[in-house]
Picture 1 (cartoon, rainbow, N blue to C red):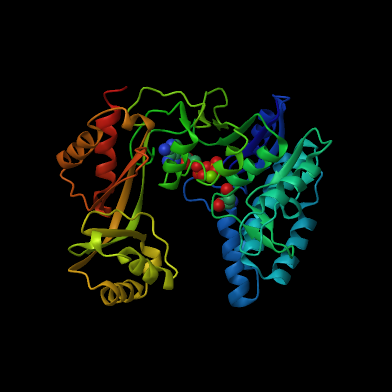
Picture 2 (cartoon, rainbow, N blue to C red):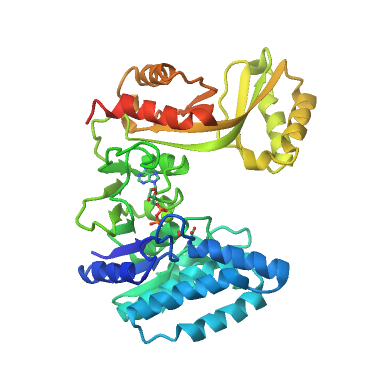
Length: 441
Ligand code: ADP
Ligand code: ASP
Ligand code: MG
């Protein structure tokens, strides 16, 4: 079986960790193709190389120089190569990179250099070929992945190679200009390589021993999730469980390749398996996991007989479309319709404009907005099997003294999404976690 392994930022943070990564790879002959992130944080308060590179780009834009941020990037990479005692002329490569940064003046190019350099170093450490994602991961002019072309270019590049290291996070457009995925996108790169390699397993190595039932930074010591389905992963990661990028399942889904989350710092731990929904065995749990995100606005629209007014939603959607706004959820009732939109898209007076235009378009009886709303998603195939899940959920939230701003129950019965005030977010997550997990311990 071929295994494709992706190592995240913490795993690549310094020379010691990179050595650990090399040991993990060498300990299993099946670990053939490796995808790496840029060096992440070494300790709390440290800055990720990718963030330093975005700052470098801003320096170039503003002052025409790479500045202190790039100096820090250079120091990190020089430190790593020195620690690993590699025969790799990092100074020369960095000099060339700096010239290219000034020449290309592209944010995506700048951001991609962390992955480019860490992949080259890892390839040198393992003494295996380096494959530049710019040559094999292809986007179309609209910025979407061109899967067909990418898989065939990658297949060709991997052919005949026992092992290889591919840089994560980026690719290029039809003109060869660098394009990146959204933040955390090396997870997607790993899934693409897994698909192209015909892998039997996509191992995603990070700094936790798998998916926990809730964000460990908010709920202390949450239970571990042993396995979940692709669908559950998509819901949880989209809603903030950022262990794995929510778009990682698309490349592997069509080939039914399972994903295993593993801990670089505790490789013996079992981790979490993410399985094709058809192969997933019901765990017996009502809820598989809970995730959430802050900073949304709810636009609530009420109008009697809305249900009978043909084209009502269409007119409201046309307003959002004119402003280029995408929404997260659209819960509706007989006479009510709500839109949940992240605050970022409504800044600088856009919210007021949108509300005015909705009033003109559909003359609602009532239009209200709630800002600073946090969304909490309770996810699990088991919810549809167990009567009374929502009653338990809302009871737990009420007992915590929290006001619910919005409810959306997906028609798949895979999730229930609740909107609460940002300030109630942590309290609600803990209350919901206790309700569904303390008794299952
Ligand atoms: P990497 O750099 O390896 O890609 P990330 O930082 O992207 O790692 O993802 C791992 C982090 O995700 C963990 O360190 C943890 O803080 C966070 N996280 C958020 N939600 C969860 C969850 N439900 N279970 C485990 N980790 C979580
Ligand atoms: N280095 C990129 C980021 O920080 C991509 C990744 O780590 O997956 O977002
Ligand atoms: Mg990540």
